[in-house]
Image 1 (cartoon, rainbow, N blue to C red):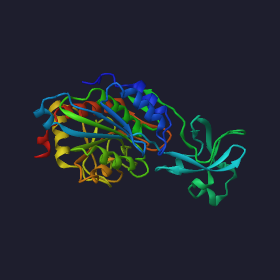
Image 2 (cartoon, rainbow, N blue to C red; image 1 turned 120 degrees about the vertical axis):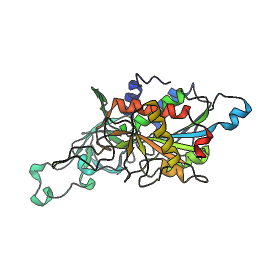
Image 3 (spheres, helix red, strand yellow; image 1 turned 90 degrees about the vertical axis):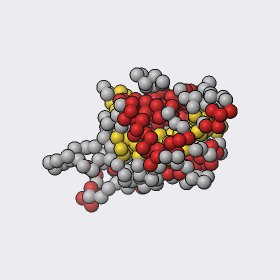
Image 4 (cartoon, one colour; image 1 turned 90 degrees about the horizontal axis):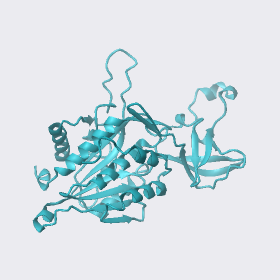
Length: 354
């Protein structure tokens, strides 16, 4: 079993501190390569920037090899962020957002820009100087600037994101880019402790936040029998403003890994959903069903690859998605790792015949 009593916090912190905005996942890819190089039978970086890792099962008899499933696990390396698009002089830069970012969450946020992690802040007109009409409307990205200070150096096309801010607070983890560095850390541990009964095909994917692009390419390369997307999912678990229970949550912190059944890009394979549920219940691992609705994971692209792939998504719930600071529970992460490792150990071709 993986060291589930002590999930790799230092590794997660290192991953969260890296800057890997969609299309430039180099920093995270280097960390992953360094972690898995002694465990992989094969590694490949493809033209899109995916890191593709194969760890073959160790049951070497011809009959055992014939029965081994080719199981693809995908976790995306990229995060939301910004791209500099114009230099206004004096360290001020216009920028465009990359991935789904709400402009209301940007003003006053600390950022880092470029390969050198140049520190800056996102600035806007002070509220004291706004007219009445301006106060009534949401701030647009066009009216914001990244301010690197007088003499701040950057180039058009440089990417940036929220400043690193990882911390642990009791049972909670707080950081930028928990989506999806927590999935990347999980997949690294699964590569290190891969069970012998399957061929584990680990795809650390690129450009998920801008259209699930890397996952489709990775699935064509691996041609798996089935696939699991390992991600972080938003938790809409705030209390209601009126009396009564919040019945509109999709996931809740503290209830364990979230197993998907449907979202805007995928209807998850019912055989795999059932198998994960049965595994969790047999081993008494807490889990929850991610309520159907919007959003999507790499599973949406993998499902449509080659001649079609049975898929399911398993995610760690977190609050404040795509903002400067997200929040997850340590136990949810631990139980996600346990569920996935236990499920992989129990996988046989029969689960696709049911």
